[in-house]
Image (cartoon, rainbow, N blue to C red; front, side, top):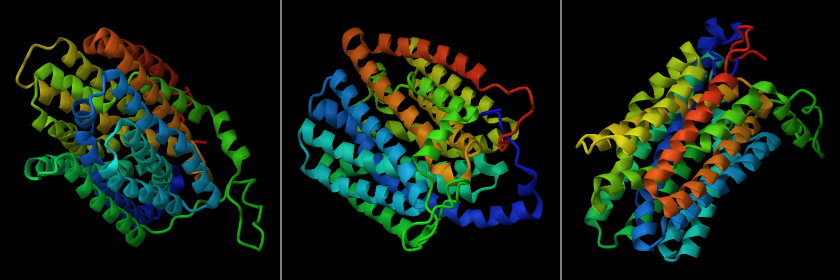
Length: 430
């Protein structure tokens, strides 16, 4: 089965599994610390970016949708290259470190980018860094955890990552409230925090090397430098694996109807009339729920199956869309929408890579992660463009209703495509 996979192989159980679990903890926690610090920096910028672009630079919803699409699309394209490069050079930490460093360098450049073109260029470079690091980082996590605890390991990492996402908007709010420089002050503080994240990675994350892939590890580099990592032929062969192909297709289809966080917050502000000063706090609601439930959701997916938890998360997102469209003007409406949004991320963000981890060999782990992640991110890129255009032409409500209808159809397809294969296969089954 696919997302329904849940059990560990026999070799991962018992004393050996317990030993691996203890050995894995430092790697997962160290990567979680890196993500926590980096997310404080990233979310400081992300919290004010929609308002900065729309209110400060005067972008239309269509223009913002195009920029938001580029923001996600560039990272998607680079993610595939980053994942394959990490497997090829057999050093996930090196490639992830390059990605973190590039994003850190971009933060101070925002201080000098005051037009649409320069801002778009800086954001594209920032997303290039994110694309480089995502698949190698997730590969390090998956390789450090036993098969039966993949969901929990990703849940721990995502919880720490979300702690940073929780603190970032709060820091942006405090800086905006206290500093004279406004947005520039936020960008400056963000740059300092991003540099700290790179330092934590270099000092505390162990160097993980990919295992050799059968048929690819026998080639030796000139000068006896050791076995060469998998090539393009081995990477392309991953798409012939039915389990990985089903995951990639369903993740992409669901991504096509997942409205970006920035648009969701703009819709919520438009619906409730929230003041600009409070806008950076909206991501806090999402992040708080995600933080509380990421580990329980990952552990639940390990026990009852990833398919059910993953698709339940999309059902909760659909409920959030419904509240924005049709709920009365309740005072609690923002809390309900943000709570459902956080539940969506808790049930999906770590569960998908946990499922991918069981569908690819160790030596191609980063490439497999990148294939699925790239398809999903490109789909969300298309969703941002289409949603921005639909909002400009028909209004935000109609655009959201269309996204909700599409999400219903795609979730129904995914429910069938990710169903058990009838042979009782488990997550780690070949």
